[in-house]
Image 1 (cartoon, one colour):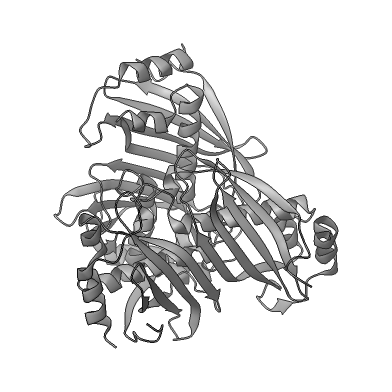
Image 2: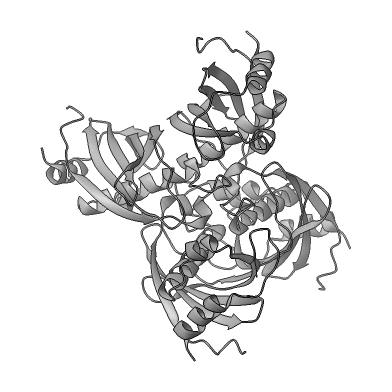
Length: 141
Length: 141
Length: 141
Length: 141
């Protein structure tokens, strides 16, 4: 299944915290990573399968790869938009793609994360059918 | 038992990370809190009862109160010293006291944390005898 | 001026991030501290004096004291409410008080922070008249 | 200049903080990112050009790209080794490569970061000659 198969973006506003800035007076590059997780969380909720529900059902989603390209820096006081897209789905893993956009719409960060599904012991598993169906149904094609 | 009963300090060097600074170009006030935990971790190890061992034995130490007074700011590049003292011990809780000192010896932050002991379900328990003995034996009087 | 002089609370929702949890499977005690800053930021905005504007005018608000009492733990998936109140105002400093409330309304954390005003070099200054008036006018009595 | 030109690794021990774990009871994937910065900081110091000195001379190193592959999870109590290598040097940027190794020597995370040099206003600049010479002299070939 191609990375282009899922085109739906979910937008989540995130307001920059002072804690997230660094001595360069902009957001620390590592502080964008939890924002991607905020985007994924919102995406799963909107898809009808909140991550706490997956955890309650014994499914873990584990990050195995992260790629981020930094274009412009966000600053304290900005409310950025984290745009999240379900970018790929395989039998044992999935990919999310993200854009972090500044208040003026310009691109701050582009990112992708690759994930595998595991059970509570950390053993890789196939994506549960109900999770797959929720995502495919939501993200459409 | 008085707070003055335990006088032994354990010193732990902590090198300031860029991630811990903020747009005021000094360490973010919240970033000192994990350093206190670094000091406690070192203290428990030195006392012969590493926290991972407590967890393996089903004991949790939970923070119930935190007080910090900020005097001077640490900066990226500083190696500060986190000084940790076991300050009080009761049947169901304990207190640690801390000083964070800058490279020139001046005081950056003074802090105390109060803790209770719980089992894995979060239910408060009395401090296990072996833990008590390790701490009293180490901290002396 | 008494701490009871200002009674207005400003409520800010904060959704717990996975990044903010720890291996006890609840929010790390240090992760509540940035939430207090989120509450202060919102308070200042609502009072008509956003903190970025203060910084642009050369005024810094520096945390000099922090006190937090932890009652119940928040968890990933919770949207907590950070309630912030301007609790005291002196010529050279101010105090904010906070409650972090769980989705069921119960109290997770109570906290206070004390602040001084400084110029860009870190030298303490009196609270600028315009800032004082904005806060007193907003918080009322 | 090939990425293989610089073969010298600098090793930095990092002890896992409780703050860095998450509710999966292992280190949060985003918490490895500041460790890479710890490795870079150590590398620059060992190369004779500490980053605070660069900042004092008006040079900023900005992260423009980050890639991380997660293999095994570190846990609270582990002292991991962050291995850092200067991987590439161009006129206006450089690359660092990293391995985070668990106490048993196995690979937890592999990562690379790409950087540009800027002046204090954020404008891209060529790498200063003294910085270039320090790195090339240290990393050798």
